[in-house]
View 1 (cartoon, rainbow, N blue to C red):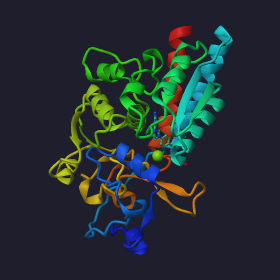
View 2: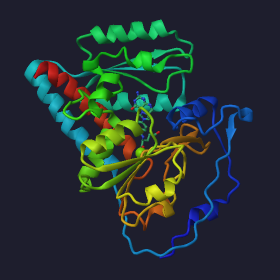
View 3: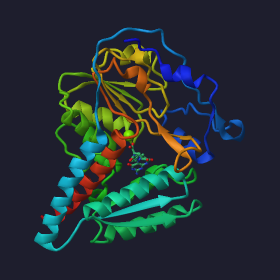
Length: 352
Ligand SMILES: Nc1nc(=O)c2c([nH]1)NC[C@@H]1CN(c3ccc(C(=O)N[C@@H](CCC(=O)O)C(=O)O)cc3)C=[N+]21
Ligand SMILES: [Mg+2]
């Protein structure tokens, strides 16, 4: 089978996709530092073009598409029944509070999806929508209220926050026992240390490992590469894979030959937030690829005016990887399922 990037050819190389200021901020927040996307581009345009075609190569590899949507659905069905049992046993249900600051469209979509998932699971949810220019003390007062509310078991602050807010100071204010995102420095520290258990593991890394396990991929003793080192995905991902006894490398903006390092990996976790960063030629034949990238790119043909693009050239990876997650329908739905899981666990610790 000839594995040329047919799509890239069909699309041509001149396509530009417009990003809003907020999207550029979002991009820079998930990118490894220093940001690869300049914020000073005229009118906030960044060029987006499909990658040039690779030299063709032949392969017999059959690629399994790991269906995150179906797996997340299974997990959510189990959560519904556990929430039902809890309600029967103690007359109470888990509660999640979400703090959303500003009007960023993709954040609004993710938050809406999280709230909808809570509703379907029978988990109570409260949304605090704060204005873009909200003060630090205001957010902190909202968090304190949720921290003390006994009907709330999970509290999360949707990221990224507007630039004027001190993200680490705010995340530090989430009560440890309610930190369902696992972004509190103590949860992160406990994840990093052997012999210690974090109360919560961040939802996206946890979802990736769950996908690997459910797809029958053994992690112990395997070489894994994590592309990206953000606080919310790359860093906890590397730590979690180490806990599962993988040999983990991290690739980031300063890495000399990311392609070479990636090609050695049995498991590739792409979490840089750079569309099409990982080419088919970066992959060892038979590698398992988890694409965490969800980069919103402007597309007026889509429902909310944008669509999500992954970090991996999906078409190129087909036929090289032994398994891959699609975007959308891969890691995204798992992130939400793990959030429900963590919220249920938080409530179980109190009620059961
Ligand atoms: N405090 C915090 N916690 C987060 O967990 C968090 C965050 N901030 N900021 C942004 C990222 C991104 N994120 C996603 C969640 C769901 C989908 C998701 O459901 N994606 C669907 C498609 C969604 C759509 O249609 O737009 C899919 O991949 O199939 C994607 C991305 C959580 N994040
Ligand atoms: Mg996805």
